[in-house]
Image (tube, rainbow, N blue to C red):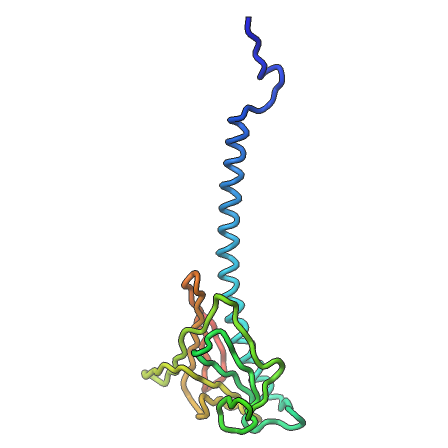
Length: 188
C-alpha cells in the first residue's frame, strides 16, 4: 500500500514553483520594457517642452521689458541653436544689438546654457518662407522689445522656423514650429 504524500501535506511541487517563477519573470520583463520605452518618450517630450518654454520666456521678457544690468537690451532676448553642439541651447540677451548670439558680447539670461537629455538632440533647423525652405546649422531666434518683433539670424522674418528633435535610441522625432510672423510656437 502506497501513501500519497501530496494530498497529506498539501504543498506545491517543484513544477508548480517553476511555472509560477516563469510567469513572474515574463511579467517583470514586459513591465521593465514598457517602462524603458515610456522613459524614452518622456525624454523627447521634456526636450521639446524645454525648447518651447525658453522661446516663450524670451517672448515674455521682450514684451515685459525685462532688464539686464539695469536696462532693457535693444536687441531683445533670444535662443541660440547650434547644430555643431545639438544638445545645447543658449538663452541670451542681445546686448550688442546684432541679432546674433555673440560670445562675450551678449549676456546669458538666468543660467544661459541649457542641455537636452543625453539621448535627445536637435537634428534639423529649417527656415521656411512660402514654398522655399533652407536648412541651417546655426540659428538665433530673437524677440525684440517693445512689441516682441521676431528676428531670425538678425533679420526681420515672415517665415517659419522648424526645429526637429530626435531621440537617438528610438529614432522618434518631435517637430517644433515657430511662426516669425506671429511668434506662435507649436509642437507636433
